[in-house]
Amino acid sequence: MSAHDRDSGPSPLRQRDFQLLWLGSTVNQILAMTSPVAFPLIAADLLGASVTQIGLITALNYLPWLLCTLPFGVYIGRLPPRAVLLAADIGRAMSISLIPILYGIGILALWHIYLVVTAVGMCTVAYEIAYQTIPPMLLPRNELTRGNARLQAGRAVSFTLGPALGGLLVTLLGAPLTPVANTVGFLISGCCTAALRIRGKVSSERPTGGLVRQLADGMRFVIAEPLLRTSTLASAIGNCCFAGYEALVVVFLAQEVTLPPSQLGPLMGVAGLGSLLGAALAGRLAKRLGSARSVWLPALAVAPFGLLLPATRPGWGTLLFVVGTLVFCAGFATFTVGQATVVQSATPPALLSRVVACTRFATRSMLFCGGLVGGALGGALGPRNALVVIMAGWILAPLLMACSRVRRLRDIPAPDPQKHSDLLSQ
Image 1: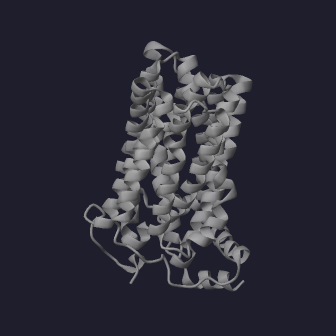
Image 2: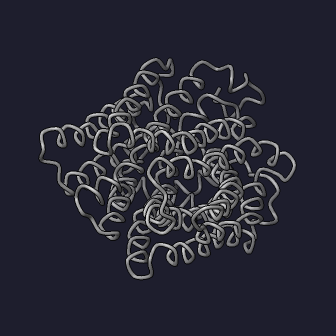
């Protein structure tokens, strides 16, 4: 009997495999957040990169979501998720360690950073697809929101501690050596993954047809489910704006607000506090508002607070960044938890890896586009004005769901076996 079919189950906090999954990904993400602080500083200060070239670092990190997500979704569905996670962690550790090594021997160049972030991005695509298929294997359906909130809380902790740690390590070690911490994070995550007892595949059902046919099945399912379709489009808009923000925020705070590296990390870490707050409230909001409404309603309520970010000024004006980031990120953390729960709850196990791939292709490929857009807007308008455009565009994500017919849904509907069968027969 699958976790989808059980009415109740042990708390996510007490399941050994779930704890290991959470611990490994949380430590990994905390240490991985040191690189977004270090890489722009390496590129700008040591290699003389422009704002547009720094934006390209962010874009290349997300390029594999555009190129690899769909085929990975088909092939990863045939493999045990544990094996995929372990291989991805090893690949990322080996890739990221090249930056301090190349710096140490005196040959580090900008194209090396481009190559490394692309390789890490490819491994991350495989990791994230497999990672999203594991919670339904461990938890009953009615625990998925709590489980995803727990995982999102770990991500939020990384947003809080990671940039602060990154700023500290840049100050103590220098930007070129800071990626060592990222390598350690991937190795710890790999150890936790190796200790998982779960060994099986997501589904024992054997897919039919070739690569194109299997991808078409996943895409048809996403398009046919109104809540899944609309939430995916909204998430794509939000991710595009997030990547634009990510490409600009370090340069904005360093150049426009004139903050030193030691203060950049803690200030950026406020986003993690907001995300942690949102993750903590996600379960309660789902019960009060309904699991479907909690995806978009809190995000819509707090989205305008994002416009406080580009209003940040030196001195006491940094409080605008703190308040705006805290409130804004809390709302969008609930959106992230809800989107993951929509995919896992509304999808049959046999289609899950392909649906995860299709939704992630639509959403994460926009991170590549957003990185390019952020860099281009920053070069044309300046970091402050570019952030105004990006934060205003972010409001469109929850507004899209509020204006669609899914606003009438209170809870996420369960998968319809007949619809699943009809789609696969087409």
